[in-house]
Amino acid sequence: MAVVTEEQILEALKSVNDPEIKRPITELGMVDGITIDGNDITVRLLLTVSGCPLKDTLNRDITAAVATVAPASVVKVDMGVMTDEQRKSMQEMLRGGRTERDIPFAQPGSLTKVYAIASGKGGVGKSTVTVNLALAMAQSGLKVGIIDADIYGHSIPDMLGEGDARPTQVEDMIMPVPVKGMKVISVGMLKPRKDQVVAWRGPMLDRALVQMLSDVYWGDLDVLLLDLPPGTGDIAISLGQHLPNAEVIVVTTPQAAAATVAERAGTMASMMHQRVVGVIENMSYLQLPGSDERHEIFGSGGAEKVATALSVKFGYEVPVLAQIPLDQQLRIGGDDGIPIIESEPDSIAAKELQGVADKLSGRSRGLAGMQLGLAPAGRL
Image (cartoon, rainbow, N blue to C red):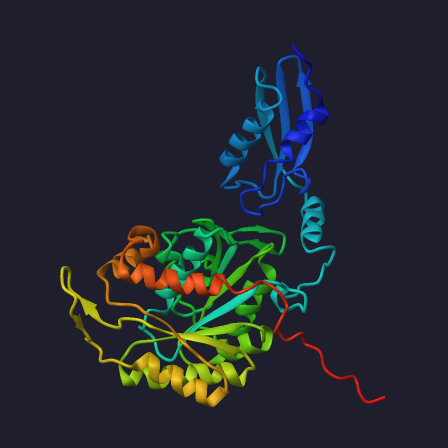
């Protein structure tokens, strides 16, 4: 029987990623040592924090990786915890050698597409649209992140079935919660208690948004979606200041009252030099099973009105991206934490949402057309 070496085991462990950080444990400095004693192999693993919720996953993945080079050996994973110095070193490595906090998506070279889901008023289904678009993109193979920026009315964790989830913190770096193949963060996940009320004013709201953008380790994302609070308040202004390259999707219902205030949300985005990529009409109509007849419960034409008005105002086309019908499964999915994209992918509502996700995913990931934050230095 061939004798396995420490180098072979270390090479095998390069295939094991930390479940939260999504980087190899060898690269993160988590492998503290390897002991080979005859047929027994012990891997000394340093967790980022004590009581890591995913240590069972790490144990399983490490055992499987070592088995690829030493199938007849007995593998033991001895777990310890990183020192403060080791955590700081890992944090600096993840930030690319930078110790100061910055917003990676605001950097001129960022290739992440950032979409802010906005609405003029509450109750139009903005959060439902966000989770379903995000999940549809993730299922297509994109690396997707979600920020629940609706500080007062955060609902994303519950809609994804993770209402009690809490992120892991490494020094002052926060790991987003992995959910359904996505990375998610919400004020609801950062509160000590789920029932705690958030009662913050402007400066605190801005600080919370910056923390979720800069203190969270997002890694390399293809797409980041932000679920904004309704209206044109502090968060919308802060987003424009911190992420001017974010593109906005306006959600409305067909009724005139909703459309009028939705138009204001789009206008606010333009005032903050953000591009509005389209309008989604939710609760467009009710279609009973077995019938082709559409019942327009909340009227009609709201999204078209908003899209036309914004197109005229901005001087470029703002299309209607989708008309999503009233579907009980949308509500059930939100309550049960199983979005309709996952539970009923063949429903009309899911197909409309999938269509939007496909359109947005098909836009090339690059710097073309993006603001680079450059200004003339002066005339020579």
